[in-house]
Image (cartoon, rainbow, N blue to C red):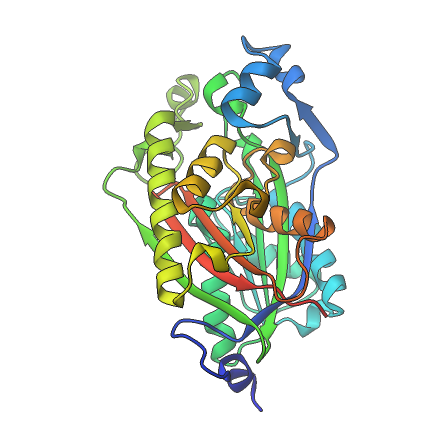
Length: 342
């Protein structure tokens, strides 16, 4: 049976569902931990204020000599070890990130080089939805015979936020998560629901640094090269689109929320996660969260949360996981994943 056949062959598999499994999972978190009290020591805020509004207790911060590619490589090596594979076995490297090492070139080829492979490699940027987007890209590649695929979500978000901006700097952390994906006739990945609304990206974006607004000394002086966010607007967008996208995935699969064993959303804010779960009707005991430990790590947040759920014993073989995310762009995406243990 070919790789393509093994990824597609199944009995009564719904449309949009792939025979693809996570073969290995690994994470990377910088050693430096920034607590709410650390932030309160330099900004007008407190541990109680941050927890009440975000659920975040701490976040990791990359060292001065750590770049996104370093976090990606560490997570990737651990995922490869977990899968029992070498970098030379990988057919494609995908890096979901909105904080690459450089504007040009892409992060993924550098990650591949550091891993010791000349496999094709590319970045994808759907911001915090990037990992879910990457899952569908990887599933399609595997169905076409390109396998296994190494998918990494890695970010150094603390490099792109203004540390003096209380509304943003309390939210973000750094980290990486990686999965090795391969064909498995008994596995199920999908259906997927992905979408965007780019009519007004200014609710969550960085104005300067691209071709529209190049960086100048005046831009830097005005701090227009930092990430900005209109919190209330994004809060409403996130709950509405994550819940609607999740419901579309369930409808495509012919399932209800009662069929979901574990809910893993993008770890942006506990109030958003609670709001989505409430709209969908998923009880708290079937949700797994790590936002209190990592803050918002953008494209890394879902693999970090999956790794934590596995370590906590919440991913026995056959667990049906609902994944959903939103991000700058604005983007959203959801997917179903049936967890497979070796």
